[in-house]
Length: 128
Image (cartoon, rainbow, N blue to C red):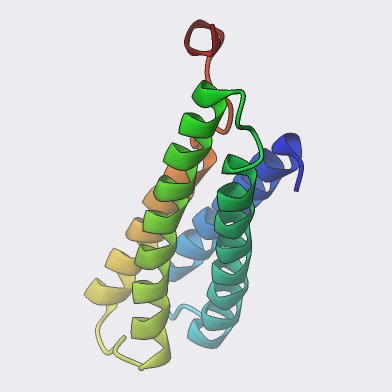
C-alpha cells in the first residue's frame, strides 16, 4: 500500500466504523449485519497494520518517517484490538439489553473518529 492509500483505507474504515456505531444506537439494531461489517473492518485494519510494519522497515534513511509509521501502526493495532472485543461480544449474542448495544455504538463511533485522525507521515517540522 502506498502512503496515500494507507490514509485512504484508514479514513474509509474509520467512516465505516462510525456508520456501524450509528446503526447500533438505533432501536432494534441489525446485529447480524453489524457482525459482518465489523469482521470486514477488522480484516482491513489487520492488513493496514501489516502494511505499516512492512513500510516502517522500508525507509532506513528517514528516521522521522519510520517513527511516525511505527506510531501509526501501534495506534491502529490498539484500535483493531478494541474493535475485535466489540465484534466478539456481538458474535456471542451478549446484546440482551439496549444499554450494552448503545455502549458498543458509542465506542465504535469514537474508534472510527480516532482511526480517521491517525497520521501516517511526520509533520514538516518533525521531518527536518
